[in-house]
Length: 276
Image (cartoon, rainbow, N blue to C red; front, side, top):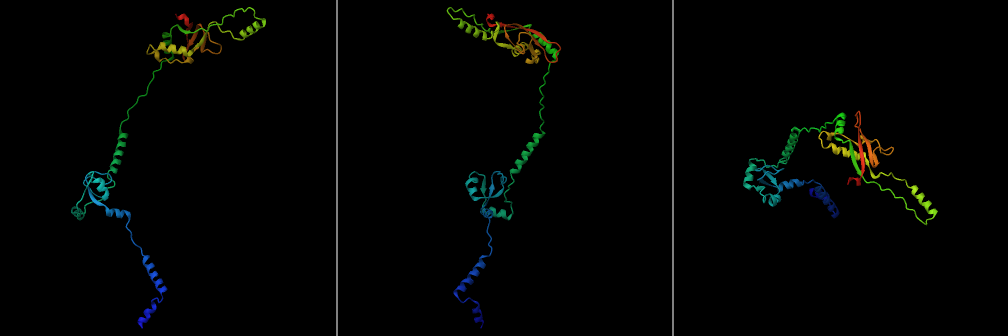
């Protein structure tokens, strides 16, 4: 009777047997399985070696650290960076609970501390005092005295004279109309001054010459003279007292800022051919 009851609980047809088996397989496959992580696998593959040199992020010489076998075989052992640890010695070390962990902070912390010490040394180091350049300026009165002493009464310049057009020769046989046209053309040209020169003598030329004369004395060389401190009193064109464009002797005025009275000097402009 009991056998009959148990047999009635089992599936009778093939499709029922197949469905019953699949349910049992699904229930068994739904169970969770534990997998080993990549780091754990690498830790299992590592071997313990003895460092022969100080290695940053690993440890000091004489320390025991785990290392990848391929790295030890290809690089560290040929370079005598580390040595293998015999199995018997490794067993004794494990029994004595010797530290065989890698020191990731070794070498890095020391560098940071050294850098901090260098910065502190720079802050503590005394700074050298750089004295600013001091220029002892002369008073306007003293500068005018030096100008009056070292600038000669007459300063000579040499320029080339502009050659004047010669009078046209009388042409015989020319018609009256041609003479009228020629006279009109000549009259349209502005007749230049008989002593006109090429270029000019400007206040810049005069200042350069005066500075050359002052350079022979240490105190006079400190006189500050600009173009604005010099102007022509005579010989210049109307509205422009900074240059002269003709031969002759002219007067120039030199006055420094804050000076009470100016210095008057003669400027003599000669033709170049008169130098010989």
